[in-house]
Amino acid sequence: MFLFEKELAAEALRKNENDTQKALDDLTNPEANTALQRNIELGKRRRQQRATEATIEQLVSMGFERSRGANKQLCIVVH
Image (cartoon, rainbow, N blue to C red; front, side, top):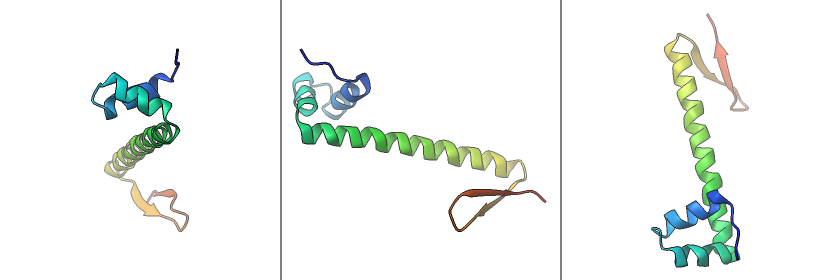
C-alpha cells in the first residue's frame, strides 16, 4: 500500500490525464516524483507572484507610486 500527499497525487493525476497507473508510476519513480514536486512548487510561486502583482496594482490604483529599489523589494512612495 502506498501513501502519497494529496497535492502530489493530484499533480501526478493531472499530468497523466487521470491515468492512475501512469500517475502511480510517476509517484514511485524518484526522478518523476522530484519533477512533480518541482512543478507543485513552481505553481505555488507563480500563484504567489500573481497575488503580489494584483496587490501592487490595487495600491497603484489607489494613488500610490510604484518604485523598485536595487534589492527588488517593493517600495511605496506617498506624495
